[in-house]
Length: 285
Image 1: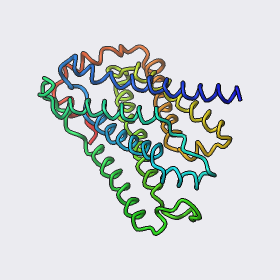
Image 2 (image 1 turned 90 degrees about the vertical axis):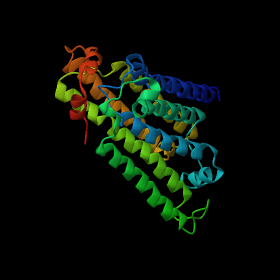
Image 3 (image 1 turned 30 degrees about the vertical axis):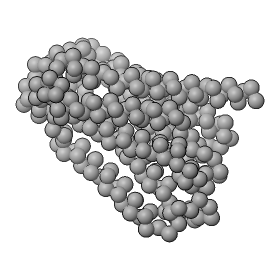
Image 4 (image 1 turned 135 degrees about the vertical axis):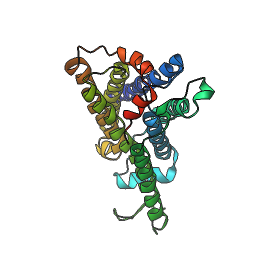
């Protein structure tokens, strides 16, 4: 009993620690933009796709944590167990959504922030396409479930039946898609420039720490339940930590090994000197 009590406390501690680590990583870009009174050298793509991702993550976490129907359907599919989503997951998602909206507003409404207009305030076709695809995918699943006869069932339902739980899963997968694609442009930019100039390594280190703690919490919760369906039943949380850590390792390798001689702090100065044409050339359309 003492061991289980310790693990429960450790899980809660890890949850809030990863919330703090991941949350702190959100402040770098908006603070830098505000300090420079400009968004030049960057684009709205990253905060915009993050807004979509955290909106989906917030909605799915709230459903898993608060909805009796969703929790009952989850339990039916996962041997009577409850979702491993915790309150700190909801808090983290809400905080990430808020900061993403704030950062996006700096690009869409520069004059309200006292910024000079920047070429990077127009989303790329790539990001708009991904966003449209995610929304369309969720809409298709929603329509399929709405027309299913057993959508409200919580027992004696075939595994292949469409339930409202599947809509929540579809929404949660939007966050996974966003996480998979949102870092790749910066990896490519670093590769082309043979440098990590302008890219904050501190946010990567915080993100990596958060990923480790998130996976540790998920593992502890599954162990306490005596069943690893806590992982398979919450694939997005499991995948988020792994995907983020994969990209973090790439960025750390670029910064500390491949391009170690480059001055990573020089990117912010160069961003101020680049003109609109340079920003347009860096867009991913």
